Structure formats: structure tokens, C-alpha cells
Amino acid sequence: MKKLIDIITERMQAAFTECGYDGSYAKVVLSNRPDLCEYQCNGAMAAAKVYKKKPIEIAAQVVDVVMAEAEVSGGKVFSEIDAVMPGFINLRLDESYLADYMNEMRSADKFGLEEPGHGETVIVDYGGANVAKPLHVGHLRSAVIGEAVKRMGNYLGYHMIGDVHLGDWGLQMGLIIEELRDRQPELVYFDENYTGEYPQEAPFTIGELEEIYPAASAKSKKDDTFRARAQEATFRLQNGYEPFLAIWKQIMKVSLADLKKNYDNLDVHFDLWKGESDAEEYIPWLIQDLQDQGLAYESEGALVVDIAQPGDRKELPPCIVRKSDGAALYATSDLGTIIEREKDFSPVKYVYITDKRQELHFIQVFRVAKKAGYVKPEIPMIHIGFGTMNGKDGKPFKTRDGGVMRLEHLIADINEAVYGRIMENRTVSEDEAHETARIVGLAALKYGDLSNQASKDYIFDIDRFTSFEGNTGPYILYTIVRIKSILAKYRALEQETNEGKILPAKSGTEKAVILLLARYSEVMETAFEETAPHKICQYIYELSNAFNSFYHETKILTEEDKERRAGWIALVMLVKDVLEACIGVLGFSAPERM
Figure 1 (cartoon, rainbow, N blue to C red):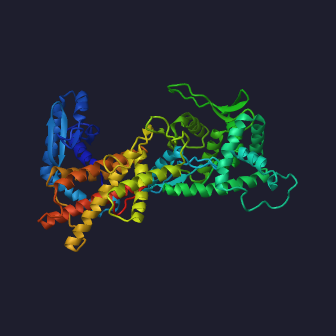
Figure 2: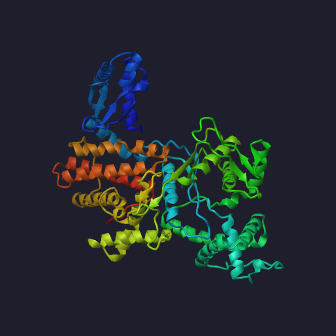
Figure 3: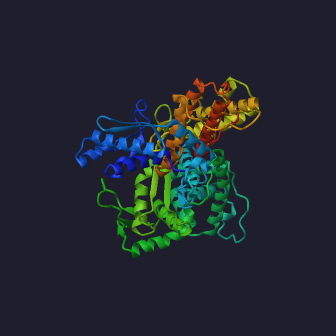
């Protein structure tokens, strides 16, 4: 099903061409003056410079051709089309045409969305958590944005592969191993003469493991000897020392169970649970290949690759792929991971989601990957660098005592706030209220994040995010629940589920709803192309507002004209279905009641 914007543009292109002008001038955009028109075409302004005519003359010619064509074909798309000074073309769409478009949307799969993905593979790297450490608020944005991007792509027909890409192979492993040695030196892992099987049970719980790492990290900053031991342990682990590999496997088993539980609470799911360790086997070949190609060279003992290109606005330092002590770095690991992903999946696009402070790192990695030929030049490699979630003081969000809040505690706090709002107007049982609070709380948290442009910092305001009014997740859900209530009452009145056909709009508010629904496919495609979930949030907020304005001025259930009433029911059902499809893509759902 063609997007409405494409249908309008094609009409305008045909008219421009018939008048002797290049069709590229016929670009149509949403009007920035909805009081004057719904769509506009400003191409006559640019064409006037090329064809040496007045803009209004070109605009008037085009309008005459469009109107004449409509009379001949009977295919009336516009109710009004006007050329106005100095050369704008203002467009209003025909109500009957829009009604037909709505009914076609209702009967089409995914509301007529033409899936551009065709099963092509896209890798989304959006976890980045370190094992042996609990998820905290700093992990929220990568998880929430990444899950939305993955779902957006899946909805558009791409084969999206989400990878958690764990930090599981660095110095933190050596720190844990040596701290464990100090606490439990009797463990068989530290007996140089031990030759038996290693224990199946881990020598620590997740709670103990989460205490061991920060203790070891703090100790390493004060004790140089301990830090040297941890570095040596890391080196031995990465070179396959069996006792330390056995400890590492226990760390991974205990950590992964906890990470999966916490990601599940966010309704965030990964297709791959890979880590930096999985890239290790590719790194020796990578280093040798970069040298063989003449791309890597020694600089102050380290091995580096130049990544500067003509046209760079600022000086970009070389990418270090091996330190002077022979150790690999994050860049080396990420390049090894890219080689693995190319071998396993050959994706048509890469999307990485991390803190925006890692921008330089990804510029370096992407350029080395392209320069070395590991990724084809035409394959997009996108880094979404997100801003900081701040407290009301404008500083990075902290607990009351100044610590970093665990993600599970943040989720619990927002659920409790929503529960309190639900119980203010208590119409449900406590059990239902708690379950509803969990659903609405997740919407409040995710929408509060996703409604902001990813690169921007934002203020985490639990009172605003959990409000049932304004641009919030609960407001969107409340709109859906309101529609569910209308539909239930209608079915009780009519004792049937047939909602009839959508009819031409009778009011401005009804037409506003229809015009927004007609933009659905365009919004979904654009949001994914620009990896911008906030555009879907903006869309559903506008649609919810438009529906609520229509609802408040329209007596839907008491309308005496049964055909009109059934048409309105069909319209509000389409609003509900579109809103539910959008929030599903964003990663949350709506309850039955609120």
C-alpha cells in the first residue's frame, strides 16, 4: 500500500512534468501552517530561478494541471489546492479519499506498511554490560534504545540480530580472581599441583560476586602489588590457563543468570550473548593482517593504524590495536567481533548503541574495518551515542546517598510511584493494581527515555514520567484503555462486534485523527532509517492528543445515525490498533484497565 505522502508527491510530479518542469521540484511536505493547509509544495520557488519565471506563475500552472487531471480521471485526492504568493502550493485532502484510504489501511497487513527489509540482516550491538557487576541506571539507555531499534527493524521486515556484547575478558576478571585468592586461598583453582576436575558449583553467589569486584577494584587503586597480580592473572586467563578459565566460566554462569533476569524485567531480549572473549580467537590473525596490508605500524612501542581522511574537520588520532606491552584493547576486540560477525552473518548494516563519549572509539573502529576491507564500503556502520540520564539537579542520576542506583531498584521505584497513582482512584484490587503498575511503570520508564532524542541528555523526573497527563507513557496507555472501554460499551449496546466502514470526516477533529493515521507507514519507515525511536513517540503523542480532542467533542456512543456511529467505532478501533502496534515496537504494552 503506497504511503500517502508518496501518492500526493506523484500527483504533483506528474503536474510539474506536464508543465515542462523537472519533477524533482515537486517535493511535498507536511504543512508547518496547519491553519492554512495540510500539505504544501514549495518547489515553484526553486524552479523559478532555473526557468526564469515568477514562482507564482509556475505554481498557478501546476495547480491548473492538477485540477484538470482530477476532473478528467475522477480521482479526487485534494479538496483544495491553491497557488499563493509568492509561489507556495497549499494542499488540503479530500475527506472521501481519506476515508477510502483508512478502510484500505484497516484491511491491510500492518496497516499497509510495505516492508523494506526483505529479510536482510542488521546487527544491533546494545548491551555492553560487564559481568560480575549488577546492571545500574547507566545501562538503561543502551538497553531501551537498542531494543526499540531492533523491534523497529523486525517490524519493517529486516532480520535483526541483537547482541549484548558483554565485557567479560578484561582486567576485572584478573581483579576478581586475585581477590578470590586472598579470601579463599584453599580453593583448588589456586593449587598449582591440582590435576582433578574443577567443581561444578561456583565458589560464590551473585551477591558475593557483586561485592568482590568493587572491593578488588578499590584495593588495586591503593595496592600496586595487588594490581600487578591482577594484570598477571588477566594475562594468564587470556592465554588459556586452565584453572583461571574454570573460575571465569563460573563467573560467567552466575553473572549471566542475573543479567538475564534483570534484562527480562525491562522486556529487553538479546539474540546473542556474546562477549569480548568471543573475539579473542580472531585477534592474532587481525594483528598480522593489518601488518601484512601495511596498515599497522609501530608508534612509541604500540601498534597503530592511521584513520584520518581528507575533509576531517578535526585531527583524529590513530587507532591503537596493540599496546606497547602486547595487550589488546577495546578497539582490537571490537574489530575481532566485526570479523566474526562478517563471517557468521554478512549484515547489510551495523548499529552500535553506547554512551556518546565513545564517539571517537567508534569512528576509529569503523574506519579501520572499512580501510582493511573487513566491511564493504557501502555497508552503513552507525553509532548512536546517547546522552546522560540526569537527576533534577542536572547531574548524572544518583541514589539519595550519592551512589549509582541499581536498575532493579529504579524499576521498583517507578512501579511504586505508578501503584500509588492507581490506588488514589481505587477501582481495582491490590493484586490487579500491582500488575497494572508493573505494565504502566515499564511504559513510563521506556517512554520517558525514548521520547527524547537519543543524543540529548534528559532529566529523569519520576513524578512527570508517571503522570497520566502530558507527553508520558501512562498518558498513551490511558488513551488506549479509554478506547478499549468505548469498544466494550459499544459491543454491549449493539451486542455485536461489527464496527462498519470509516466514513468521510464530519469535523476538523475527526479529520485530524485520520490525517495522522494516514502518516503511519511514513513515520515507521523514517524512524528506522534515522534510528530515531523518539519520532514514533512524537507520533503516538500527537495521535493520542488528536483522538482525545475528537472524543471530547463527539458523542460516539449516543449518535443516533447507526452507520455514522459504526464508522466512528471503526475509526477509534484503528487508532487503538495503530497505537498498540507502535508501543509494541517501542517495547511496552497496555493493560486492560487503569
